Image 1 (cartoon, rainbow, N blue to C red):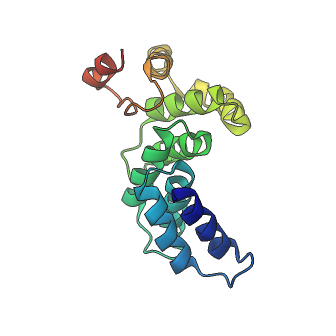
Image 2 (image 1 turned 90 degrees about the vertical axis):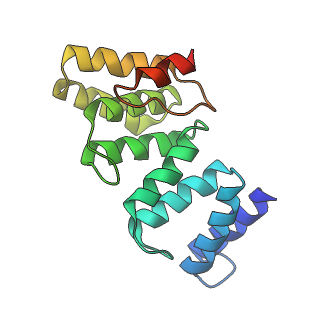
Length: 157
């Protein structure tokens, strides 16, 4: 059922077979996202970033991207890394951004692979080591590790 809502939302989002209607798309994405469908969660997060069909809200964008990312959605992982780099909806955090890039790259996200190489010079050796450790300890379906939250890291093991 969430897949059907997602694909109908996608049709309204892109205007394929129906008139483009971002409000209807957002409503349907939201329904599918609430049912745990990662693609819908990711697309809803983008709508909250752009303000298409919903009021622009970076906090909501982060919320939905995080839910999709926790399911291993590579686009959501990479997108969330950008939010952490820029401090949009979250406190800017280069270590968390790097962690998310590593996780996205492990899912064969080509931009994440390139971006990792460009951002390593912005971090200290200790920060890079921490990002690698956080990425290594995370498992799909678990909450993403939070920077300096070693309680979360212990729960992941």
